[in-house]
Image (tube, rainbow, N blue to C red; front, side, top):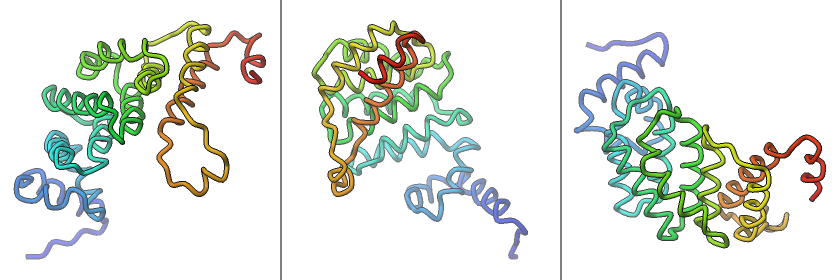
Amino acid sequence: SLITFIHKTFSEFMAARFLYENHEEYLEEIIDKAEWTEIINFAIGIGLADEVIKIKLQHHSLGKSGSLSDAISLYSKNSIYVSDFVAKELIEQAVLVIKSGGEERFILGVALSNLVSMLPKANTQVADILIPTISSWIDMPNNDLYLIGWGIVVKSLDQNFDAEVLSNTLKNAKSNVTIPSIIQTITEKRDRSDRELLERIALATLRSQPDEKIAEFYYS
C-alpha cells in the first residue's frame, strides 16, 4: 500500500531510516546524486557516517576529486558519530595528499582547518595524527606545507600565539601565495584555497596584536 506524508521532511526521514537499514544495497548508487542529499544527511545523523566516509575514501582511491574534502566536511559536523578507525584513515589519507603536493592540497588544508575549529578540544581522533605532522610543517618556511600547517594551527581552539611569532609567520607565508590581479580573479577559474589559508593566518595575526599596534599592523 502507498503511504503519503503531508510534509516532505517526514518522507525524507523515513527514506533515511530505510537507507540506514539497507545501505549495503543502495548507498553506493545514490551517494553523489544531488536529489538524495537530504535523505543521506538524515541517514548520517542516525548512524551512517562511517559508511558514507568509507565510500568517499574508496572514491578517492579511484581518483575522484573532491571525495576527501567532502568526507572531512562531513566529519566536521559535531552531531554525528565517526569511529576512531574511519577518522584515522580519513585524516591519514588527507595528510598523504598534502605531503605529496597533490592538486587538492590547499583545498584539504582548508577542510582540515575547518575541522579543527569545529571539533571539541577533547577530540583525539584528529589531534593524535595532525599535531605531530603539523609540528614539522610549521617549521618549514617557503614551503606549501608551512602555509597549510599554519592555516590549520591558527584555527585550533586551544592555540594562542605571540603577536611577533604570528607576524613573522604571516610574512613567511605570504611568499608562498601569488595574489592574483582583479582581472585574473575574474577570468581564471582557479582554486584559491591557498589564499584562504593565508587570510586565516592574517586574521589570527591581527587578533593577536596589542590595541596600540592594530593600526600599524593594518597599514603595514
